[in-house]
Image 1 (cartoon, rainbow, N blue to C red):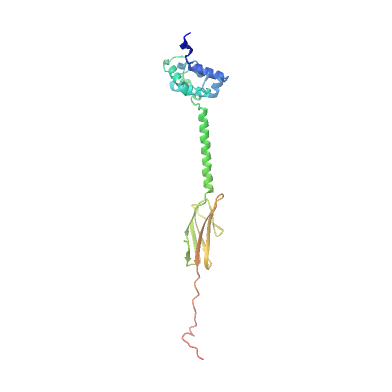
Image 2 (tube, rainbow, N blue to C red; image 1 turned 90 degrees about the horizontal axis):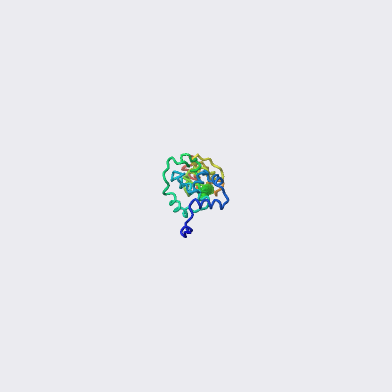
Length: 238
């Protein structure tokens, strides 16, 4: 026996056939799983690549079959190229014509990619809800335009004005105040004589409230002095 023949590596078809049989699977079983017709798988196992006359589709199907059987493409790529590079062009050969290959044959997604896509989708959904949660927990924005801090009001009535996050609830000194759709608000407030502390607060359902405090001083004007015109210029005598 020629010793070189004993060390001849098995053909690609032999590798596929041995791997399939080791799992106790039939070609029909695998065809149903990976959606490649059984006659194509049979052609691959017999090295009859000329029966699949389109190189792009042929390589895709061989890779898909190898992955299903757990055969690394890196270990068989050279063998595949060597066995398929000299395939004769037989336009009228009886075999598997790619024009009749079912759409399912070309839409096989490797199992690993399925897991990758699923994981990516789950991560995307996770971050989406994280952003929503962050937005819900964030304190609402609140800006008070009027009055300024430490303001001395010349009038007893003062206007409280500003803007707040559209989704927030607004209150001035504990009383809820309406706002426009874009968050603008204003409210007239009657001051007490002396120093007034005005508390403006904005709150959302799940967040801490935002509070702005203004101190306003109002001093009521003194009553004018009055006199009797008949007494004007008179002096008192004893």
